[in-house]
Amino acid sequence: MLLHCYFTGTKIAYSNIRSLTVYCADCVNISVLSLHSWCVQVAIRDVDEAAMELLVDFCYTSTVVVEESNVQTLLPAACLLQLAEIQDVCCEFLQKQLDPSNCLGIRAFADTHACRDLLRKADKYTQQHFTSVCF
Image (cartoon, rainbow, N blue to C red):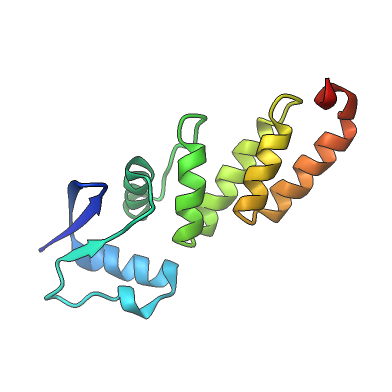
């Protein structure tokens, strides 16, 4: 049996629906996701296709590569699916990227996605480097 995930008109098939279903039902904590054997399609909206693919791969491999090119789509998807481990890794990555040119943007991003620790660290960074941030 295949699980078909649709992303903005694109169809990607993932095999081994039972493993993915059990993991996702546990991580999302929504009983609706506990799919029955007769259910073969799930529509997942508002999640970037590449980020979703990384998260599904993480469900199987327990590894994910967070980098500048994917962190802004991966963090919101991890928040939506309540994957706290991925959220933490994304926030740690963004914290290491803080500099005067991006600390306000990272602060706003952290605030949007309820990343309190990153928000606090971005605030602290902004205060410590206030003159560099302003000019």
